[in-house]
Structure formats: C-alpha cells, structure tokens
Image (cartoon, rainbow, N blue to C red):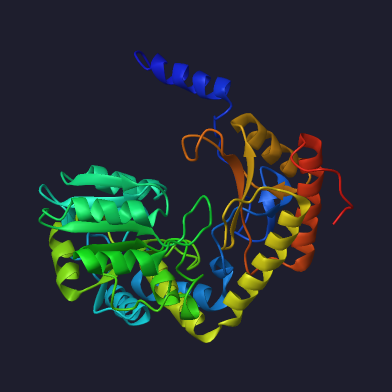
Length: 397
C-alpha cells in the first residue's frame, strides 16, 4: 500500500536493534508443557499462576452458560448487555475483596484507562511509582492532572511528593501490588500510612497479586491486613483467575460513577456469558481449593532458590515472577533462544519494557508445574548461563 513504507522502515530498525518481537503460536491449551511454534517446551512465561485455564469446574461453568445464554451479549452494559451473570460476578468479587462494590471491565488495561481519568482531573495530582505497569502510565496520560513520579519503592521520595502537593484538590497515590517485571511487592503498609498522614487516596493494581497473595488469593491489600484502608483496588481476571477481563473493587459511589463516566466500560460490549461464568467459578475454586496457592508458593521457593544458587541475577523478586537478568538486549534475546533450543519457553524482555541495561527473561512458576518440569528447566538455564558466561560452570542440577 502506498505511503506505508515507513512501517517497513521501522520494523527494519527494530530488527537491527535486536528488539523485534514475533508472535509465538501455541498449538493447544495453556499448560506447563505445550507445543510452541511446533515444538514441545516447558512453559515458564505464562500468567496462568494456578493452572485455572483448564480447571474442570471452570470448563463446566463456561459450557453451562454457553448453552443457557449463548455465545455473546450483543450490547454494551449500559444498554442491554448486563446479564444476571455479570451482576453475580460483581457481587462475588466485592465480597471476595471485602469492599462495598465492584465493577468488571473488558481487560485490566481497560480498567486503568477508564478509572484513573475519573479519579483525577485538572487541579489534582497523581503520584506514581517509577516502575508501574504501562497501562497505569497510559491511564495517567489520559488525565489533565499534574503527575509526580517517585523512584521505585522510595518512601522518602513519596512523602516529599505528598508534602509538596498538599494544595491540590485531590491526590492519588498509584502503585502496582506486585511489579510485573521485577516480581517485588509494593511497600503497601508504608504507602498507606503516608497517604493517610497527608490525606491522599491509594490506588493499587493487583494484576499480579490476585490469586497469588492474601487469604485465598485476595491480593496485596489483604496480604498486608489493609482491608478498608485502600480506596481503589484493581485486579485482572486473565492471569491467576485464568479467564479474561479486569475489575475494580471500591465503593458503591465509585462503581456508579464509573458506569456513567468510565469510557472503556461504557463503549465496550460486555463479557460473553461463558467468560463471566468461568470467572465466577474461579472465585469458588480460590475459596475451596487453597492447596493450589500453597503449591504455587512451594514451586516458587524451589525454583527461585536453585536458580539463585546457580549464580543468576534475579533482582529483588519475592513472588512467582522471577526475572533472570542478562543485561544487554542481545544477550537476553540469545538467552531466550538457547533456552528454547533446550526445551524451555521464556521470551526475552528488552527496552523499552525494562531499562536498556536490565534486559532479561522473565520466568513465572505456576502451581501446575511438576518438580520434574522445574528440574528440567533449571538444567536448561544452567546450560544457557554457562554458554553465555552469565554463570560459572557448576555441577548439573
């Protein structure tokens, strides 16, 4: 097509820089071992923390809803797209998160794009952690609020930003609960304490905490015993929950306001019945099968201890997200390539997703992995690490 040559030029630049990404194609369900690009590999990059994407109870719920309600809703929520299933899901989520109300969005990204501009406008101040997820950054960009970015997890800098912005109409402190590229947990007790001291709201994105931290996977707020002290909690239904979507758990007033002003919510067709029913079933599973979360953490500790003992740099990770930091982009991409050759699927993560000198492969251990899966993956990491000079030669795992 004429006048589109610029796109080809930019693709060539990406390839020349070693940061070009191609889509990997799975030939089957999301499982610990699967066929990727025609080859059987151990999957170490899925957000399917608890293995719920194939859970029998969720499959049954989805099929039952499909048969009763059809394949789609045919409308946005505000017209004729709200079914009893949507109301049931939101009621369950509110009770699960110990809040007054909840509202489901089409994705976690849509949550941040739709909620943050409603919470903060011109004359307000948003104070945000430097390493917050891209969807938070884009949600903030959609507002006319002033913004202050504090260095990652720097509580002195956060307090200074709160002190300097006391003249603002409203102030919103925004943080991930678990940081998606580094796997560390936000210092929520300190953040909440400072926000209360200076009269600010707190907004926590629990995308990688839902189903992972807290009682039965209630998230980082519950993990720290802060129920009732965080004004806005966002979560996803597409990671540990195993399905699709995002949600906000807060007050009834905010739910009502978002129904009227949250643009992604207003202008997007609602979740299909099968998706909604599977999400409801996922909450049932979280509440009745705590052994899944126990297995997740057992596997996490096993893998994390051994890969650190090999000599890899895993940063400040304290969750199932374990980055293996290679440094330069080309080295991270080569690490990923060697791992795939050895039967492990763990794509490289490079700039601008992470800092240019902090390129990595990001691993996520799940409850569905067996010890044999993890041992084989660790052996592949040892071989790749020695080949690239990231670790010294060691006795095979």
